[in-house]
Length: 517
Image 1 (cartoon, one colour):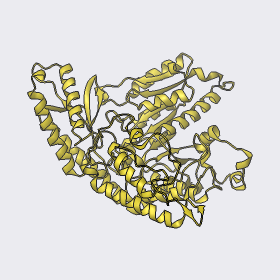
Image 2 (tube, one colour):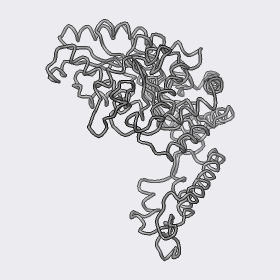
Image 3 (cartoon, one colour):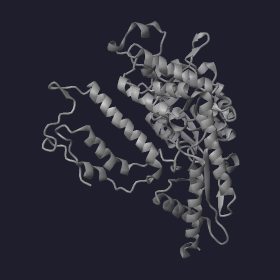
């Protein structure tokens, strides 16, 4: 499909945003008209996304061919822009909003979150200091404290307590990667001070720890924070701990490092690993860390949302003894990207490592010590008004509806798990935690595990190419495993059952093929 021409010959009398001869990009009439068209597009998209292929059939570079490589020199009607969006962009999207999307942890959304994001984008604040955006800073503090209460975090993690300003605090970041990076930097600096290092000269002695199921972004963040790759410990896990971190192994490895003159510095415990949804024992990990005065960070990016339900809260028991915890409402708490919440028990340990204080940002409120400027709890300086959408989600839906949302997804995952277990051709590979089911076609008869791996790979490829569903895979215990993640905001039980029927049908076709027999 060729690009719609946006040169002046195509639209000889059109000048977008021009009023009385001057360019006004925020002309109220245009704002109203454009946003009405955008809202119509969004509602139409959500009404129709179920019928769209989940994975697109496009090749790299397709969009440049359709929309041309050079920017237009002249204005075009906004309708032209929207037409190109529909004709060229939408067909190239992987539809994370589709109720037939089961590949990765969900990227949930809601009307309240979209509205909050729209309003925040319109206000377009740059809230690096309290003075630069008082309401944005206060809103972020409030939203984080609300969510901390839903998670029943100790008051030591809150910005404000009944007694006034707390010692802890939080910040909303873009992703878990950022949460890991900033806490690694704070832990690094604390360990260097503790070990009497002259500047950063002692960094080669610092060691960090995580289970081998920990998200790969942790190991990337360690390198960015300057840790020697040789001192990053990836601790093997197995079926005996359901692939969670074994505290005994952790202690053994940390003690060996300490005996060798190294400085155990940081442990990342995960609640709901990406690969298999394993849960590291937070309290036991914290007990081991305390022996070495090491920082403990809890990555609850996905499963943290479930912990607003009392029946799942035990997964973060012991959190009162860790140094930081992060979770991402943009995964499972109906708050659109990007929104990762980080809480620390001692906010000064974070800000001492990340603080900047140029002359042009100095002001009386910051100097008073009554606020923590959020720029000093992140890598960059500029920041978006992320707190608004999170507050609007909690304020609009309330705790009961958010809990209902989590429980509904878990119930649908239980349904799928039951369907898998009732079919002798399949096996559930690890215990289901939360709303992820890891399953595979089992090796049967004379079939080897290697052949079963290939059959599962073929099954996934055919399912995904059908456009009717999208699944992803992982490797658990050296076996190729399919991941079925429930949680898309539009999902209902009928979508789960329809996906299972397609899986059964496709499996039967594969098993009939001579090469698989």
